[in-house]
Structures are given as C-alpha cells and as structure tokens.
Length: 160
Image (cartoon, rainbow, N blue to C red):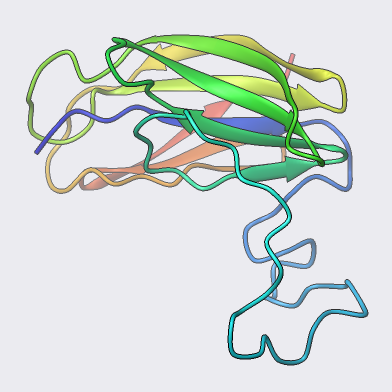
C-alpha cells in the first residue's frame, strides 16, 4: 500500500462544514436544487485541471473551495484554494508525499486554518504506525481532533 497524507481543514466559523451537513443528519438546508438531473446530468460550470493525484474530498468554506493534490512530477503536495468561479486563489504546500512504499499512512496529519481569504498551515503531528488498516477520516468537534488510526482512536486538543 502506498503512503498517504491526511489533511483536515479547521474552520473557526460556526457555519463550518460538518460530516453529513451542519446538523450531521445527511440533509442539506439548501433549497431550489434540481429534483432530477436529466439524461446528460447537471450542467458543468467549470473544471480545475492540474491538481495532480489526490484521494481526499473537497471542502467548501464560505466562498472558497479547498482541494488536495500531488502535482505530476512533484514530491511536494499542495492544498489548492479556489473561488466559487474556479479561479485559483492560493496554493498551500504541505510537504513531501509518496516518498516510499509503506504499510498504511505516512503518519503525518496536517492542520490548515481555512477562511474566506485562503488558508494557512497551522501545524503537523506525526502519528505512530499503529496496528491494522489506516484509512482515517479526521473529525474536528469541540476543540478536539479525532482520528481513527489502525486499531485505535486518537484524540488531540487543538485549542489554544
């Protein structure tokens, strides 16, 4: 299994993204959405090419879209920040990635503070290898970072 690097976006605003939506119930409060997509699907608004390899979901915060990627030919991964029209606003380097083959994750979790004007790398923490499968999806709640890693649940305080 190849190495992977897991990043999570820290949003200080109360309206920040949550797993399964603001109320964590899988329901979107948005109205006026298409009821059916039709034969050709929804209308494509724009495409951002050149992000490189990546296995994480995008995150939308206020008027910014955050996406991770490892550009082809590069060893350094980036969080790319776009406006809602697809214009690249910022690239935040988070360090070398895919430097070797290993079991599970590279063991580095990075925290990016995100906001309407872009983002900044707050810090990183190296996680021990642990036992079992390593496909964590970090969650931030109540000033804590929760990571399901191997056969353990790791909890970090991320408040000042």
